[in-house]
Length: 89
Image 1: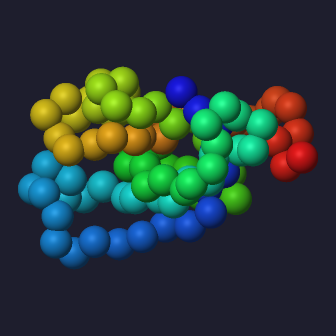
Image 2: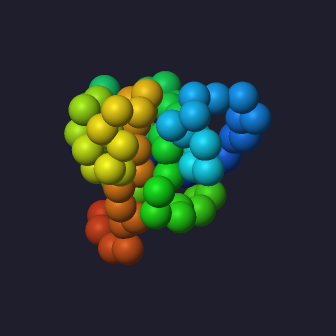
């Protein structure tokens, strides 16, 4: 699981049937996390907004975490961080 900041959203009119009705967000891992770097696209089932820090599950944990075990999901926002360290540094 990684900590990231939601930096945008995207829309896709053509996608797998199993993804219809879901929101996709662009997440930038925080620099203090191992492996941080490139942005990723994560399915958002909890209603995160741009500018919020979130917890992102990847791989099979993402599919299980968003209750979509047979969907083509590789990253899912599974939590919004309310308090914690100052991730902006």
